[in-house]
Each structure stands twice: as structure tokens, then as C-alpha cells.
Image 1 (spheres, helix red, strand yellow):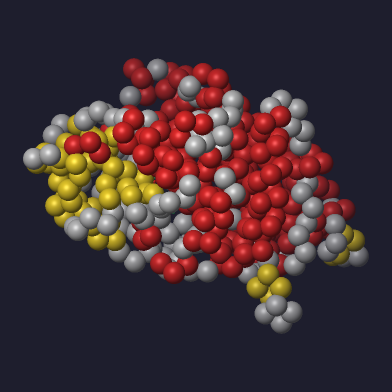
Image 2: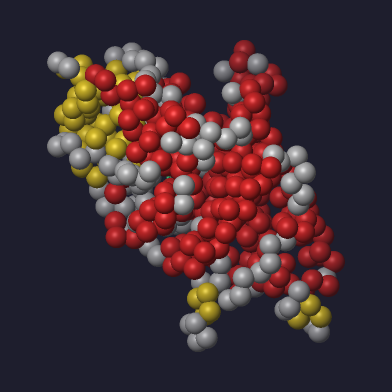
Length: 406
Ligand SMILES: Cc1cc2nc3c(=O)[nH]c(=O)nc-3n(C[C@H](O)[C@H](O)[C@H](O)COP(=O)(O)OP(=O)(O)OC[C@H]3O[C@@H](n4cnc5c(N)ncnc54)[C@H](O)[C@@H]3O)c2cc1C
């Protein structure tokens, strides 16, 4: 399969994006063309196993300095003026070839784990964040459990940390934890009395047991699994933030993660759009190319409009966050817009490409096709890092106030 040209280069103008972000996009695109594109089909279609973890790509991302992008210079980062915007741009570029690689190795590692560390007390931040930036460990961020995920209230969380001499002992179970089959360190949300606390735990401690990777519909590069904690000791100095302040710590990282999912959605939509519009210019039905049918012209004109809006929205969310330190509404909006769009464009792209949209590998000629995996990978964006209904709730809260929305 030849790679279609990027229609974004013709349709999209990065008029209000700062020069530093343009440079990052250019460099990261080159990295993705060289390193991710050649292996993307294999990564996106290989079922999950511990052995399938994308270790070579993880190391390459670290070596290329991509983990430096979100962070200030004192921990080894680039110290950009618009770090969140650049981070989301990296996610868009990585996800153009592999959304689940972007989600696991960048959204999970660089945002959820990294941003948790950035807000940790100095002795944790200054030790572990430089290690993360250098790619010296694989990190996990654990809030979800078998019986609690969207609802992270104290009464729902069943993983408990009890105080012992010099620290805490964790008992309980987390579920769906990205990177956990190969994880080294984990930020884990625990019930501590009548509050929730985030602890930074060593996954090689006795008492930590991780199951085999879950076998999912999509996002195969994003290995998830159950983690059991049995009397796992965490020293006092590994409390991230305040005892009882764990939910705030988690939500701070998740707001950025939501912008990331918005950018990943834009990438998936763009990749599906590029492949299918290229195909439409070549494939003839009833004696003329599919691109000559006004039905499809209008559908893809509408998708172009939606991609433009979703990209602008994640960029606005990121710029506002970088300038003002918060962007809850835009984060919620861009998460909905990007994730919904990815599903919509992938569905129409498969429809217009017919069987060539549905196939993974055409075995006779040995040709690979990308839409099958984009379609499977798109759905989870509407569910995780706060289901889209929760994002609607955030927006509704700003319209009607907590008095009405709770
Ligand atoms: C690939 C993958 C990776 C993941 N990685 C991680 C990770 O690294 N760390 C982690 O902690 N978790 C992770 N998760 C878990 C993920 O965040 C949860 O699956 C997600 O939060 C939804 O929780 P749930 O599946 O338990 O659904 P539930 O909480 O049971 O919700 C089910 C559905 O109910 C609906 N719903 C919920 N609340 C409302 C409401 N107020 N109003 C209307 N409808 C509502 C939504 O449609 C939602 O999808 C991952 C999951 C997957 C599949």
C-alpha cells in the first residue's frame, strides 16, 4: 500500500500556532515517518501480549527527546513557552500512524504519569521526572478498579492504603491499567480513611501481581491488565501531594489527558480521511471515480470542516492551559469533538472504500490496509479518560451551575 498525501497540508493553515510548535510538528513528523510508519501496521494489528510491548519505539521516543517536550528545563525538559500545545501536537503526529502507541507511550507515560510527577513534592518530582524524560522506566497511572472507574468517589474506591510505621500498606485491585504488564512504577489512587490519596509505588515490590494483558477490540499497542496489591509497602515520602488530596492530583493529570485524546481523535480522523479521499480519486464505479459522486464530495467536505474545528479546539484548549493554567471546558469539548469525529470519519471511510476498507491484509498480493484498525481503535476514545457523557456533564455544569447538575 502506498501512503496517501496528507490532505491537512493543503486544507489546514497553522496561522495562530507559535513557531516553536510548528518546529516540533515538523521534527516529530519526520521521526514518525522514519520510525513509526514502517512498523505501524504490525503494531496496530498484533494481538496483545507482554512480548508485543513496543519497547523499541518507547526507547526511540526517549532517545529522540520527545519526552522532554512537556517539561521545564530544571528536570531535563525543553522549557517551551507552550508545552501543552506541543505535547498535543506530538500526540497528533504519533497517532496518525498508531493511535494506541500514542495513547500508551505518550498520553499514558508523558501526560498521566509525567504530570502526576510534575505536581509531586520536590523529592519525588526531581528524582523521577528526569528518569521518565530519559525513558528509564515505564510508568502506570491507576485510578480504575473492577467496580469503580467513572465514579471515583471515596465510597466506590476499594483499594485501601493503611498507615503503618514509616509509610502505608496497599491492599486491593486496579483494572485496565495501561502499560502495567511491563510497568516499573505506578501512581495509584487509594482510599485512606475518608479521603483518597495518590501513592507512588514500586511495581517490583513483593505483593504486586499483574495479570496477562487484556485482549481488546482495538488499541493493541496499549497493553492493559489487572493489578493485585497485597500488603504492598509504600514509604511516607512517596505520598504524591497531600494525604486526602489524591482525586485532585488525578484530575489535574486527566484534564491534560483529555486534550491528548482530542488530538489523538483528530489524527485518526485525518488518517482515515487521507486514505479514503486518495482512494476515491482512483477507484471507479459505474465508469467514474468515486470522487465524482457529489454524495461523497459533500460527506468528505463535512468531515474536512469537522477536522478543522476539532483541531482548532484541542489547540485552543492547550493554548489556554499554557497561558492560564486551566481549560476545563475546552478540554471537555475537544475530547468529545475529537473522539466522536474519529468514529464518524472511520465509519464513512470504510463505507466508501468498501471491502478495501474492511480488510486488514489482502493475502494474495500481500497488501496491508489501515482503516480496519483505525475503526477498532476509534471507539475507546469516547469511553476512557472520562466517558464523553462526563465531558457533557462538565460543560453542562458551566451552563446551568452545580445547583442543577450536581
Ligand atoms: C484501553 C484502555 C486503557 C485504559 N487505561 C487506564 C489507565 O491507564 N488507568 C486507569 O485508571 N484506567 C484506565 N482505563 C479505564 C478507563 O478509564 C475506564 O474504562 C473508563 O473510565 C470507563 O469506566 P468503566 O469502563 O468502568 O465504565 P463505567 O464507569 O461503568 O461507565 C460505563 C458507561 O456509563 C456511562 N456513564 C457513566 N457515568 C455517567 C453519567 N454520569 N451520566 C450518563 N452516563 C454515564 C458512560 O457511557 C460510560 O461509558 C483504561 C481502559 C481501556 C479500555
